[in-house]
Length: 244
Ligand code: 1GP
Image (cartoon, rainbow, N blue to C red; front, side, top):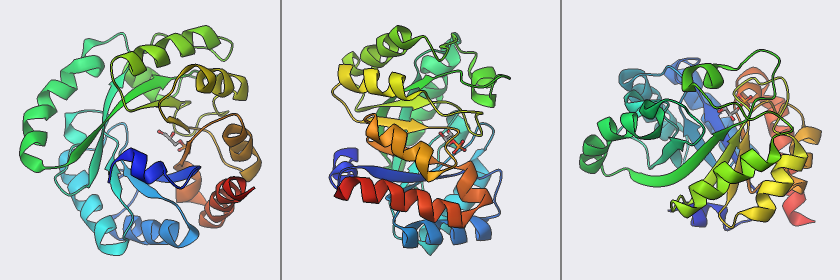
């Protein structure tokens, strides 16, 4: 199933599981709950997760739920043969060649043998937090502040013109605030590929604002790990939006 198939139901929710934060057993349970609540896919990845833990956790998730699994790797070490898809990511606003093509080059020959479906994605990290988030620091980003809407648009369009099948606006896991709605709205108006938004969304209201602004996919990670009941409410809010 490609991303277009996953998106065909309209507004979509993905649950992010960081293999470094969860035992395989807990990850499997969380994935099963996310499926029960109506999430559309499970993303597996984190800033530091290595091959072994990614393999083990991805296998546990696939045993426990029937949703598509999508790897969300920060480096070549986040690649696993056990997932259905992989976000083949370029951190568009990284200043380090490593996150533009370097890690990808390391992973590509392995991916070819694995048969995991790559989904090309332009990853654009937005700075919404007082202290830089992990992804901002690790990814060595060319900072895009909350007011830098033109810069977010320029990076997003660059991704689209490179042929990426989607753009991900990322505030960073556990960010103080989500990507600003005005930025989501403007980027959505300028690009024609699906728009994924994640980072810092912990309430149904914050998610609805971002969906209304035009996000096609909402990603939540931290709240899923900390408060599964809130995850259920967030997923319901996304689904309720698509039925109005
Ligand atoms: C991080 O966008 C995702 O890559 C999810 O962020 O953990 O803040 O939900 P949260």
